[in-house]
Image (cartoon, rainbow, N blue to C red; front, top):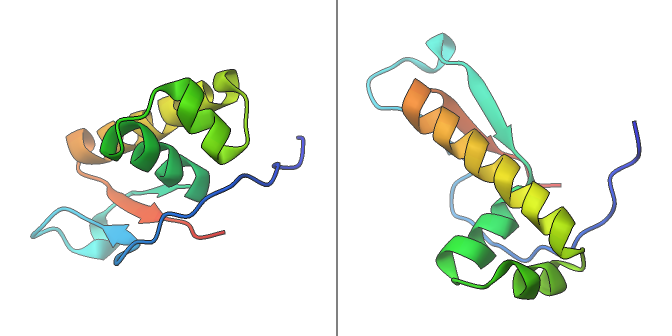
Length: 91
């Protein structure tokens, strides 16, 4: 496995853990969302940037950004639809 490259992230969050209501935490599966995945969601979905522009802000290629945002969306969708906890890793 290749070492992970350093990517530019600047997303500040108030909480780093989200879970469905009324399900005890010890009964939940957990999905980890990496810092670069959170940054990709912020740039693409919250700031409404095109992938090429978001990739430049993160210091990655457009193709790499596409892989990051795809992974972030998949993890987020799985957490919401399957009722899993979402842990945001700050690296």
